[in-house]
Image (cartoon, rainbow, N blue to C red; front, side, top):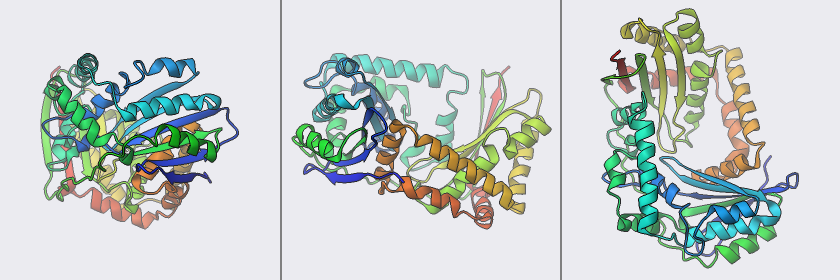
Amino acid sequence: MIQFEKFSLQNGLKVLVHEDKSTPMAVVNVIYDVGAKDEDSNKTGFAHLFEHLMFGGSVNIPVYDEPLQTAGGENNAFTTNDLTNYYCQLPAENIETAFWLESDRMLSLAFSKKSLDTQRKVVCEEFKEHYINKPYGDVMSEILALAYTTHPYRWMTIGKELSHIENATLDDVKAFFHKHYTPSNAILVVVGNVTVAQVKELAEKWFGPIPPGNKYERSLPAEPKQTAPRSKEIKANVPLDALYKCWHIYPRVDKRYYIADLITEILGGGASSRLFQTLVKEKKLFSNIDCSHLGSTDAGLLIIEGKLVKGVQMKDAEAALNDELQKLTAEGISEKELEKVKNKTESMMAFEDMSVMNRAASIAMYELLGDADLINTELERYREVTAAALQQECKIIFNNNNSNTLYYYSNN
């Protein structure tokens, strides 16, 4: 059981504290309720660009990293379609340094043409290296555009196209900051060798004076139910043919999400999984195959991706994959197999919670979902899944009208 206390500042900032006296360290984690799904469809990639800009200096601190390194700390950040998360870990006795740094960049970034030009160049290079020039680099972009017609999950976190970042102006960037990077749109989580009283005092001192800003009210278009299968063929300069199939699943707080998560584990959770055992080891149709899901806040996707063995025909590989899905749907799974994947999930969750950094991020994310106590109760939701419920969900998810298929052919 992970104990924490929660309070809010007058400016709307939510603060959660988890005391852990077994470590000399402390983690300060700030999550902003903004991701790629909150962008204008003609100005995408901004949430990710901000992840970079937030390290480019703030009003009173020209270089973010220097004071933190002096205090023995380290930091990083990540952006998804749903959120932006910043975190730093440092010796607990130096925790005020982290409060000073995080509050200053929430107060205001040092907006400058130089900083924007520098970070824009970094992001554009990242876009080219990982998504344009890399073999299979455009796959995720193609899958999302195929599966989503309406919801802003239809573009990737890096952005829909390079030009959106290339053309980002200082005014665009300022507007995005003032809309989303406010105390009322953020959650501060502190974990480690601290006390609640100490965190209250520091939070009031450093974050309390920041104006609340206008609370961002999210209003996103819902993705309509898919009523017919979709597919697309791509030919590219890649070493092997590849097959990608995806299906719509459920929002993150839906109880059926946990069933879908276990289905991905049964089908693609490592070398003992069904798809690997049958399609890689026995039939030797794929050189590797994975099954995963996006883990997104709104209704996401369950994705199967596999590289074909050279010489194998796409139609044969797809037929064999469909057979495996049909088998799971028709026959269901044994209690023993279900228990095995539940145990694996439980041990993975326990392992994740061992580090103070992960605990801080988890508490922040669960609070963003609406209930930080999910960190303690979520395992029960996995335990409640029955073999019958799992089989029923397979019938719903793997319906052909819910499928999106990307045939990725090698030119070689």
